[in-house]
Length: 254
Image (cartoon, rainbow, N blue to C red; front, side, top):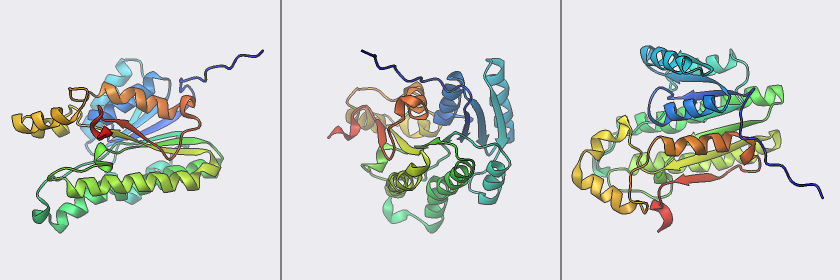
């Protein structure tokens, strides 16, 4: 009898692009992928942040490069990806929110949130996937979505709408890119303790409401996302595409 062999979770020889890679979930994804052996390129809007994170990761012995990039500049994003060797892994972590009452939402709010969370994500993914298809390489595209792509909450109508859209986009991408052996999945976190969530979570009532919804009874940590990112990027997830990995502490279980 021949025993099955566990696939490797290592990413040696792979190249990864992480948008929004200088802080929060994006930084965690970049570090996790690099620690697993990938050569990582991080992007963010602020050049000084990119420089500082690249220096710190290199000091830790990780293979990393960086570029200042506003992913909503679709031309600049496409040019960066076209000028690089194909990225085997793409993590779309750049994102944002303008939380507020639905009756107060402005066109500017909608354009800003949808432009970053959906439009930029779509066209960055398209550029990266085109390079993989052109070169006949397999790949893994991972969108950092949200539990708010499956449920919603007060003051989050527009944000939630963009994340629901990301979930639908991911499934459509998976269907079309599957024949090219390019997998597309989402990670759907609950509230993670980051700079982006700090202000809202500093409100005691809001924090209590959040903790009451998370069945594990604690807020998420950046480290809670790092393993799922490597899992979806690796051969451990070789048969997984068009799926959402809920990292929500049980929020969406009811």
